[in-house]
Length: 569
Image (cartoon, rainbow, N blue to C red; front, side, top):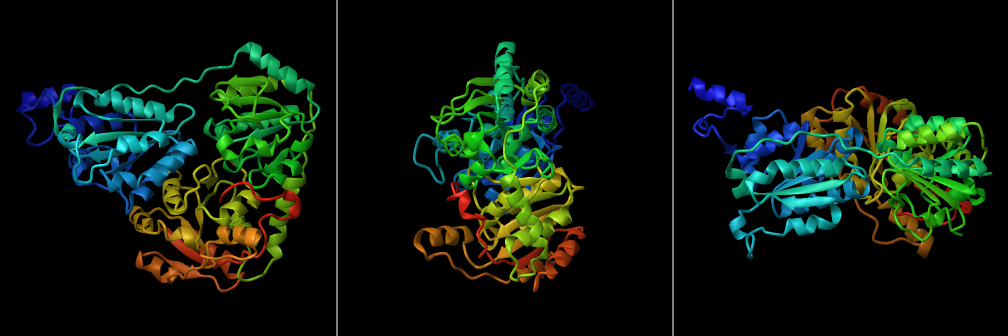
């Protein structure tokens, strides 16, 4: 017996009672979990199923914490945001059929918002995958259009390669979702293999010739502007972008997902663009002769809104070659590590200061934000609510936005000072993002304040994850903007038809609902109530909830000169 245990230790294999006889091999499920450990996985968010029995038992005996959630969509969003905030793939788990299909929305979100995520789903035994079978859906085919790569593990021997590839592809620029399907008979089989070593993805550097060509364009420009996107956040390149703007004088407009790349109080910050075509005019793009698109994705906003005449010189600085679009044809593409590229380009251009762009959009948004602190209207209007949240969070606190009309207000006027402190579901924009995202944010940053703003429509889509939050003891504050309508659709219907329809509903008593989960909760009865209740909530050592009646009569457009809205909520 001692000799057998020594052999296990030499091999680095965990001893399992009743499995000592199989010294040269162990279950494929055990190997799979060892591969997760080799990837540095801390959490797997999901729901166990009959087809994942071996996998879940292997997780129980590992260093990986399995976090049971109340709906697969909630677990998927947690993995999505965990990946977004850490740069390491978040992992979610569902069983076959309905469990796997419930993961498709957060997987699609991670795919479009470039968040590294590895989804794992169970499947029936391989002997029944060629025919009609109970709960069988070809999940590999389902996942194909919303993942960077996905595969079925058909043989235990390939598990180390499959896991390593899933993580490498998910985390390599541009990151996104990958998927592994695990048939139950494959997971129960014996195998003799080891995890593959983890290697950090390698980023190329742009050629010197292209860099000098870009520098010539920058030096020759009269009114250049930077359009900064999500890729700058992912690359940890905010310091390089700030130094580039300081050294060259070129101002920076940010997408909704890039809020905080420049301090909102920086005079070179042009504000957040992406709600209306007029955003770009007010930010000075109409007069710009050069646009430096830095870490910017077409999914963040179509280029036809800032280059309608197709007449802008464009320098694309990104981790991959530019996507093809009739309105986005760069003169130069600097492909590689964004941080190093900005640093090198800044060195070439620092002696030619510029003064392009316009402060009008930034002044309009910040002006409306600041003026709101004196607004005692109740039900509260969005700017005052956001002003109070901004005061309560401080510079490092995290605001998570669910999807709805409140998201447009957050994107439009909420000032951010650091990257990844305003989390928005942008590309797929699925409702129900807020609460699971806040749980993940608190797991990654336990010492930061976290607030999630939800409409009363989106809140009920994943409110069951409040139980998960209470169980995990992740103390964040859920703020519900209550108006008993799908507000963004009301806004758009009123603009298009002069009336709205099919948008009204009734709500439960949100305070009692939260208390039934074991959480403290409050309803605001006046404008003065909100900052007081928010302060109480943030002081708790467990999740809490604040219900805030909201008045959406103030138009988020903030003026006709900004033009019609151009993005979905």
